[in-house]
Image (cartoon, helix red, strand yellow):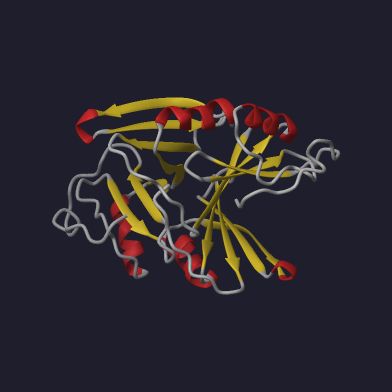
Length: 139
Length: 139
């Protein structure tokens, strides 16, 4: 057997692509519009890692998507957690759990999917503004 | 960057291992007990696919984990969708969306995480009891 993807539902496709693609850094692998089902699917993955995707389901008929506690988060290793958090901030994403330790951060997608970011390899040396940035919200 | 895992919270560690490991067929890669945090983490992955894991978080202090609509499901390709569904049934797992088409099925974990199963490669020829089995519940 083989892991294929984690599917998340989104209320706004473009806002979600801005988050997952532009701010987080995933690549869009395919987009499939299904007019007869009134939905669009977008599959994204980390660069060079096609076999572990996020499937974004955008239903054309509006629905508000609340979260639950049984699903926790999606986790990604990143090359430089400070650079990733800066890029996320530049796209208006709040760093809920800043990487004070140079190792771990949490953000949320526009539909409140929790995303864990982990520094690949050893933690980076503590650095401002992250080292003294308090937590906000929950993740 | 690199996808690491999808984290889910579970109310019973053993029941969840029976589901994800024994019934679904994932392998346990590591288990980490953290007494000072009163939680246990178990990391599982499909055989031969270490780089896409499920992280099971078992908090020792009881909490009921409800689901939300923003998270959809985890999806796995399987070698024989009928054999997988038989094994799940043998472990008491309801086949909510039976593989009538020899291609797709849905089940849920003990904590209601939706799991999509997709036949790897072309669909299998329709076969009983699946071909005439109705849907049940939601997934």
